[in-house]
Length: 58
Ligand SMILES: [Zn+2]
Image 1 (cartoon, helix red, strand yellow):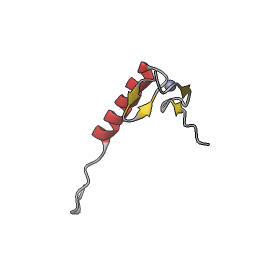
Image 2 (cartoon, helix red, strand yellow; image 1 turned 30 degrees about the horizontal axis):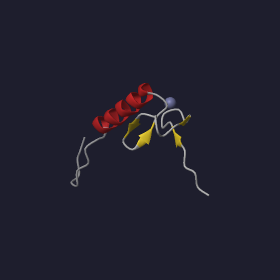
Image 3 (cartoon, rainbow, N blue to C red; image 1 turned 30 degrees about the vertical axis):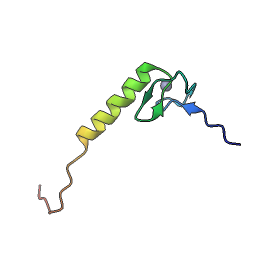
Image 4 (cartoon, protein in one colour; image 1 turned 120 degrees about the horizontal axis):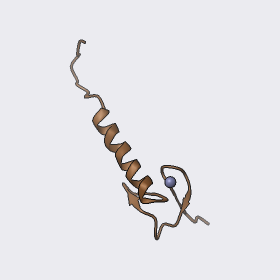
């Protein structure tokens, strides 16, 4: 038997999938954590260094 509950991606708290806010297919305990997670993703995307195939000298 596999009953999958949702867990807040930010703090790991158990959430009700019916009412929990959702971002990127993940569930969150509150809008605040959903927002924070979204911001984290956004930041990580921007901070991600560009990868080039060629060698790049500093
Ligand atoms: Zn949370």
